[in-house]
Image 1 (cartoon, rainbow, N blue to C red):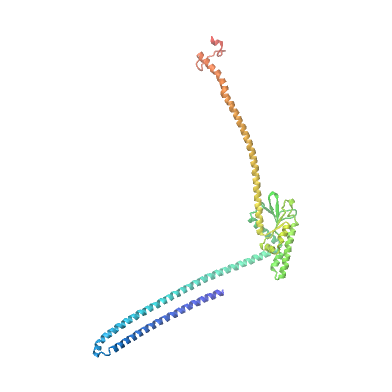
Image 2 (cartoon, rainbow, N blue to C red):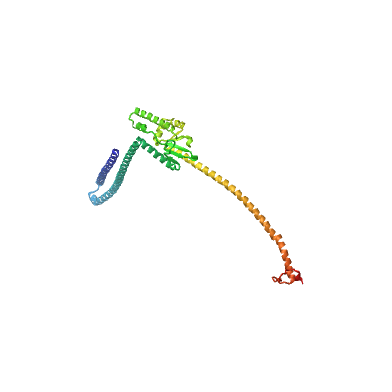
Length: 405
């Protein structure tokens, strides 16, 4: 802030100096112009006197009468010469005056530009100062909120129950981000042989994967608050011991139990990336040691990566199951299709046999039936009986001996 004020004062002093110098130069220019005018008039007057003296010397030998007669002419000539010289000097003086005026106008324009720049700088300074003040207030407010949040987080981490709730909340946020849903992809606080893991992930083929989110932070907080290097070293060693003890503790539970359809590994969640990085930086073999104990230690980012792999595996399994069901349905469809083809062919054969029977009825049987009808028709024509007028007596039949008499 002091630097900005000093900078602005320097600009104001410079502008004032420029204005003073311009004003002084303007007065000097006017004085120079007046001096040049007086000097020019004096020079012209001296030239006129010299001309008159020369004329006197030149005509000194002439007679007084001739001099008197020509005095008016000489006087007119002198006046004309003086007028020409005066006019020439006036033009030169006017040109110099115009040049000086132009110079002064240029200086005035430059001073106006400087004044405009000063005003712009002043306005910009006010705007920048206002923005800087607003940013400082915002930064102060953010720092205050950050301190309050850090204090609340510190109080939360001191209490083991609150610390566990905070770890569960962080884990749930990661699960939600990975697309996992409670009751479908995982369960919370599931009873397992007397133990209760914080999270149990439901995998294909009735497999499960357990995760514990409770993690010891006490000595880590003491390490951050320690004032001396020796205290920091002691708390750091105690913290790493707590971490390894925590890994050994979870392995003694039934979180890994193939008989209960669990996987051969379990997850231990550290709900803070800074703590996870601190462990990796100072205990390079910790992750490998935990893996040898079939424990995967993960931070929020690594947990998200693991959940993504699990989600991909579940999707692939479901796709495989769907493909298997589809293949089974295709097999059933193929079997039914074969049965349909056989039945259809059988029906076609029956239709073909029926067609043959129909053709037989329409040919041989019809011919055999139509032959007696033709004989009857021939007999009717022989008897001269009109069509449809058979007169048969009682007890007589067509073609009987009584009919022939």
